[in-house]
Image 1 (cartoon, one colour):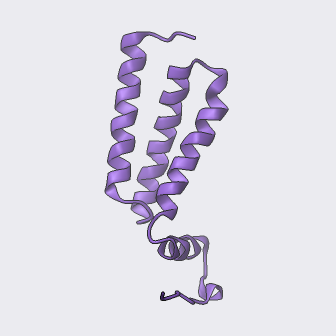
Image 2 (tube, helix red, strand yellow):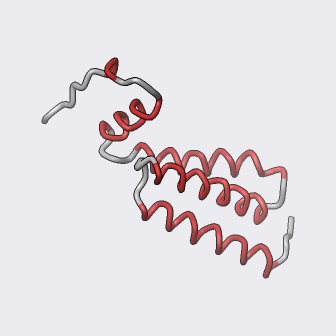
Length: 100
């Protein structure tokens, strides 16, 4: 097994640190960050009905996923899945109404 022994003190800013962690985790850091962010936001929005909580959580997650894509921390698939999920949740919210 080959270990990456890159010196972390050579980084100059938070972007370089996150890109280094992303490369150490074989590209899973950004994807897991987006997933954990969605779960945290969903739990935070549980004061509202479930459909509203899912829609709000997915919208914020989509915005963050797009920003992370610009920084090359997530793949395009993550952004596409987030956008499709947001569109589907907003459609379900408007069509089905908002039950508690």
